[in-house]
Length: 399
Image (cartoon, rainbow, N blue to C red; front, side, top):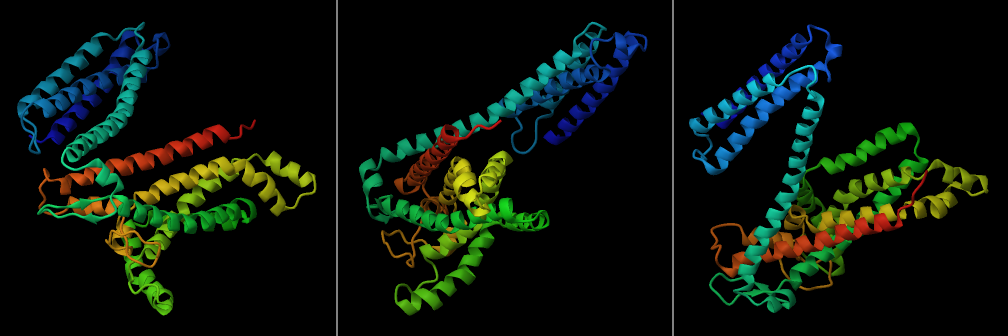
């Protein structure tokens, strides 16, 4: 029997436990619910949670360590889980009495569920990092770490004699991200200032959702836009006539489109931060004779600057991890060049390419993807830590 069927049965059993728990609590005091320690609903929830949690734990353990892992669960495990849930329901029903602290019991169970959910996120991150570290260590046991971190040539060959220097990939990543931030930060910040300080409520109600629509567009669509529209325009009307590039795939193409993608990210965060500046600061500035533009430049932006810097660094982390726009807009050439109209590539693109197709996971040409991944993880982690540090250290506290 499929796992989902047993989960449905557990939910039905828990719902029945909820109804029985309420009825028994009311019957225990002869209908005088004011004599109960907790609300009637807490007695029902205590029984329902006791049954469901007992059953779901058995199902999870059986799925991890028992049989039936190929899309279905062994019926033995399901029967054991249902039996455990029924036993828990019976025990919970037997504990119902006027003095029973059902609310405390329910809150303890809910607190345990919340702790478990929080732990899942932490343990998942830890598992990802450890898995990448193990494979990275395997890679460095086969390939020199000095050649990887300081090499300037990227030519993987599964036949041997590969050059796996990451500097061309790191340069392409930082170059594309820099151009993207040069586009997104000014436009996003000015849009946030307009929406928070100049726009009427009606205009803000239209403009803000319109800008945030950009955040919902899939990155593959941005990549197609870069490949079909932006790249040819730059090649035919700028790079080609000036003789500085003849390809529609370039760093500038990917950077411009990625910058457009990041505009709502910067705009929304900056808008929230600017709106958090107290109105009393604005009124005080106006009271001293300052104009609106002077108030924005000398009062509002300085007060919101730590949060704005944090938003920019978070946008940089988003840009560094982007893949599809770079694949379609910047190409796959690993090279060190200052010309933004030449094709280059990034770390994320090469991670995908090294793990795509029929590859040997014991070869350094494949394992290098994990070394690139851990490098990218450390880079984005440092940016996020820096953003949090700036926000917390320089954040203004207002009453």
